[in-house]
Image (cartoon, rainbow over all chains, first blue to last red; front, top):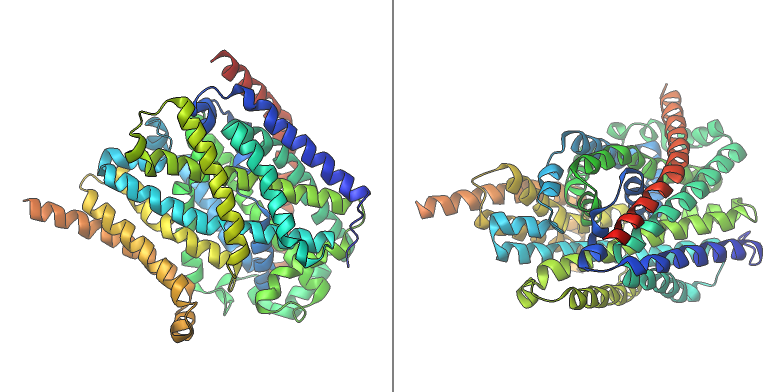
Length: 489
Length: 42
């Protein structure tokens, strides 16, 4: 049951879609070379940079994942947002790693690693970044499809059609307009998304009553809804993983780093980080409030375990009036399209720039490079569609995002810090670090699917696996580098 | 006490979000204009 009205809400969504796709296609005329396509000619200023970074880091999957945290853990679920906001502010303020990265004018992280660790490490880093990034992004489309079918009241059989249409719309302007289209549409999407989210949150808070919502939290979760340290489910290992993931993501997540690399200069790059940091708290708080509103509306019994993620979209379908539901869908489409476009171009740039390097050796013409980047974006789109249909998500969505992200976040953050600040670091340490960072989380994902190991693995839990990966990659870098120095002596 | 802390934090975050959205909506368009002009000249 939904209040979605095809005429009123459908028109709002259609106007938004036509507007944003037209804008994305209009700027493709300014693409003259590969640099324009991948980093928008390094001409991005502060406010556009903030809008783009904020829109990219907020998609439907993120919103659903964070609303699920709010529904299950209350305000304690905001902990990853506090960690991310803090990490981005500190990195922006100090310029830690991002200053040397921007100063060297590279297009991707592996390009920086090539100078310090050699071309083999550049290639291996590219593979790990793309593998972790695509696995992470693989669930975005299904979550968006689920959200939209629930809120619009479509039959579940239409899920695949909705997913394909979303992807097609995004792929068209990203393939043609590259990073410039991504920036222009991100700006429109940031404004539409923000207006929609603010309107929905204000309406729900006024409608339900803020303190009535808090009372529901008290009744369902008690004091652990406000204090992550008091929670039985949100313990120290989870908080530690949140902090590690936050710093690693801020330093190395390709879609975040591509904004640093597209900035006009290092000073602007640092200011983009400082300016965007509070938004990472918004990114968790707004969905968490929606999750708490769902808890107030439905209670804890209607959506349990893996169904908890469905509480928020079901609430919005029932509680929002005609007109506002159209604005919300436009807002969420905006959030999702900006994320998908940025992610597609980020991973394609790594595949072309770093994994395909042994093939083109940097000698292909700009025209051929542009063509290949466009082909790669299309291939990534097809992969996302197939993976989104196939992969059955188990457990918290946010945990899945953290575990798959860890495949590359752990080793790449260690490599980046070592490349910038640790002189003895070398290719042996880098390779050991990449191997360890990939093996532990991938083993976790496989073992949790096997009947023989599932119980034991779930008993240990994803948080301890995640934390162990970060420490193990750092140890692998130190031991590998020292070993090479020892043998060479 | 817990209620008031989270109420205050949520209110601050929401107000910050409203203000920043307005600023970025206004100033971001200028950034786009300058970016396109720069790319035209290149």
